[in-house]
Amino acid sequence: MTYATDLITLRDQLMARILEVTAAPKPSYSIDGQAVSWTQYLTELRKQLKDTNGLINDADGPYSFETQLFT
Image 1 (spheres, rainbow, N blue to C red):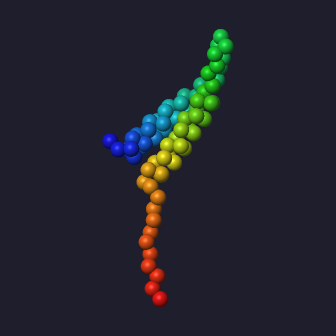
Image 2 (cartoon, rainbow, N blue to C red):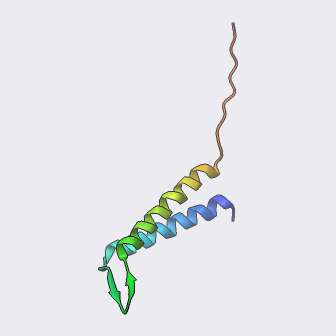
Image 3 (cartoon, rainbow, N blue to C red):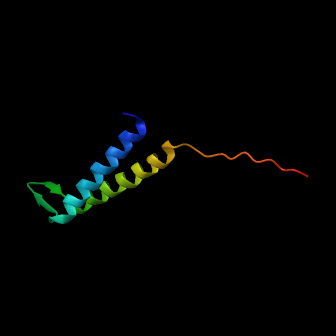
């Protein structure tokens, strides 16, 4: 596997988890001083997805075009 394919795998896993979480949403709650925020969890998954998409775009590297001007 390459770096780019690893990133694509990660993106696909994040998207699958987001779909799973949104298919059966749960309320945030607090028990014995321990809080579980599903909204914050979903926000973090979305941020990771956005960051991963950015890394995928950057993995291709910058593009440069060579041109010639004739006079």
